[in-house]
Image (cartoon, rainbow, N blue to C red; front, side):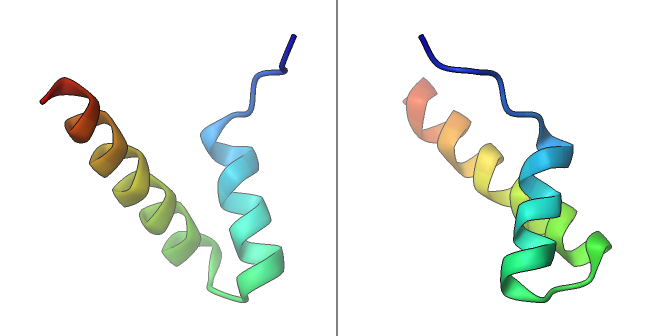
Length: 42
């Protein structure tokens, strides 16, 4: 089965791959996860 990925790991990956600051990366990950969860509820 799959493995668990944390918000911190996602943020770090965005930071390394995209080049945003760590804070911007964390904010982006939170925004994406919020959008996904809101779409799942509807």
